[in-house]
Length: 62
Image (cartoon, rainbow, N blue to C red; front, side):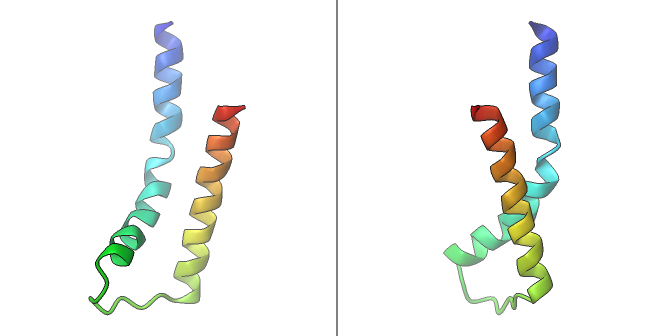
């Protein structure tokens, strides 16, 4: 049982970096006004991060 818990935690650890990409955008949406401009590259990176998180969740739910 303990090995399963470690495996689950390491799977979540792999997403921390991906989630951090989206974290700043969530704050910006709630508290706009600092003048952060999004580039096409930023938007693409955020979109890819969201897709990765979505796929991770879909795998865990199924």
